[in-house]
Image (cartoon, rainbow, N blue to C red):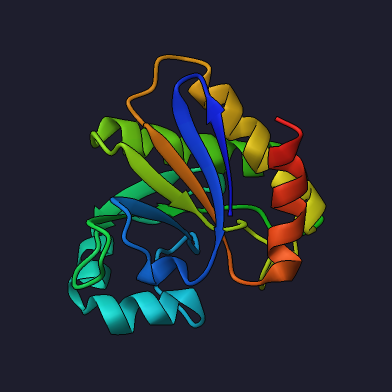
Length: 174
């Protein structure tokens, strides 16, 4: 685990299953229609229960770069921020990833959330390269935390060493 201070806020990197983390809220890299699919979406639906998908029916669809918040059902977290990130080689991929990261932080701030966990957005099925993802997301979080945020802790959660290493290198450079 690596931990840094940015403007009085803790930014940390850990490895594990984001849906099993004891955090106030975590970000899910959502589809524009907000339907919980396979992978983490399936885990959220199965472990969190049907209330999450029911709540999402009233919140979508979203454009790439937008985010919304829902309850987390039976999960350890209290909230889920559903952010629609870009797909690999989509036009303006980096700008859209930055926008989705900032929108997630803004949704958390608006809900009074002080602890938010992020996965490496877009790197799974959507194929955004990890080096691009880590650079854009860490820089966007740093930019957000330069203001006067209510958020006191941001956690990047890597599922394995392949995801962990680029975020570790980027955080060490802060």
